[in-house]
Image (tube, rainbow, N blue to C red; front, side):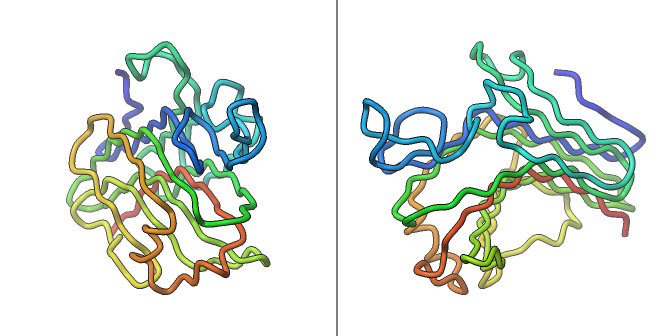
Length: 205
């Protein structure tokens, strides 16, 4: 794998599949009714088989950023998405906001993170599940991430940090209702939308 590297900081996030479902099925965002198998897509292009202009918004600041789809990042022949941020302070972000009718959903994703920083900086790569109300106000988040030593991401009442310790592929699957217990500031009844965020960030101390 070729990583985009500059000087002494690197942040790379790879995402293979992403899904929400009432039934564990295949890559995407699902509820109970819709397609022939009883599921309906909520997230557009959740498996990244179409171009990133389909369903996803790119935003960034500071230096070089890169958003790409590739098939060689994972052993399977399907597409994965790669988000890269170089050594300049700033971030790279790929996101999508999805209206939901219930938090009785199962989340699943396959992710891989690479991070590195010297003593003068910290970096973090994350897949965020942000919980929004009907007015798009932020209520809280679940953050699946890998980070360097000085990164300031910690558990709070509005953020549950699920930390990955290595650069291997990891598969996650959990109930959103159950996960919200770990984010006590969020009232599940108030959650009207979920914002999925692929985030790479670099900060100098």
